[in-house]
Amino acid sequence: MKRATLEPREVLSPGAGLAVEVALEPAGELGEITEVKARGYWEQVWRRFRHDRLAIASGIFIILLFVVAFAGAPVAAKLLGHGPDDIYPTAGVNQETLAPAGPWHTGTDLEGKEVFFPLGGADTLGRDLFLRLLYGARVSLEVAIGATLIAMTIGVLLGATAGYFRGWIDALISRFTEITMAFPQLLLIIALAATAGDRLNNITFGIFPRGVITLVLVLGIFGWFFPARIVRAQVLALREKEFIEAARMVGSSDWRIIRSHLLPHLVGPIIVYSTLIVAQFVLAEAGLSFLGLGIKLPTASWGSLLSVAPDFYTQQPWLMVWPGLAVLSTTLAFNLFGDGLRDAFDPRGAAHN
Image (cartoon, rainbow, N blue to C red):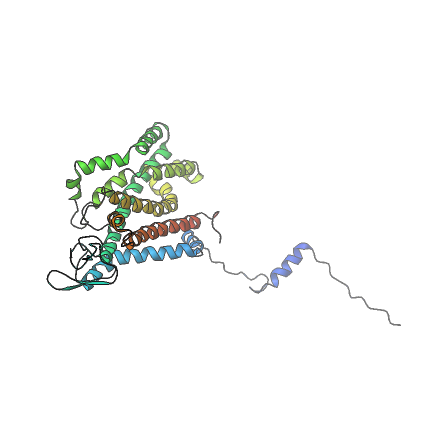
């Protein structure tokens, strides 16, 4: 009987086993150097952001909204042959009920010319609801973006100053912030509307509708306190970092440190909060215009369109549906877009790396 021949086995150490596994990797032979591409900060932010489908869809909607409001509205007015402020008391009004005409309506004006209203009339004067929706989007975006720029500029400057210098400067800015937060903003707007409203509304710089500059200034001047508090908290944490101490040791001035070392680290929070605050200002403009304190007629505004709707909600319910959907979808898109940016800038909250 033949004896079984046992082949000697080689016992590998843990380190050797790891080397064998590395050698068997498809990337190459053992010892071969594989090039690894380093990803920059903004590339990592984009990789995390693109996985959020709701945020991507919201961003696309916001882009389309800007295109429709600033490019599509004039084109639509030219195709329809009339503007958003043009009055057609016979063509745009149902002569039996004296309510605004319904959707997809074609009427005849006083000169016998046919006028087409895709979404019907906007009010008892026979203005076009479709065009006023488009031009109302332009007004809402101008107010929201302008007020956001003012609020974020003031808030970032004051917040960074308070957080970096601390001491009596921080105490002074903090008390000023608290006073601004407690100030009755609505009462100020009512007072301005009753006293200097007409003069302020006439300030247009030749490119903005009446009343836009007034709302931009009021909302921006009284909307900076939340950005200031957020930036102050961020700067308080950043000012103790090693790179700030190194900048001080090489003789950099305080304002250079704030400008060149602190503010670049605040780009993420500033972008995120800016998108969120735009939605708040869109709602604020619509609410003030609904109350008659914001954009004045005949300038188109979503809030002023909603203010007409309660008079005809049983006869023409779409008068509140279309501007209501416009406000809802716009604020929702900016909020979802801001949430996606927040997750992308914060790796701890991102779902994908």
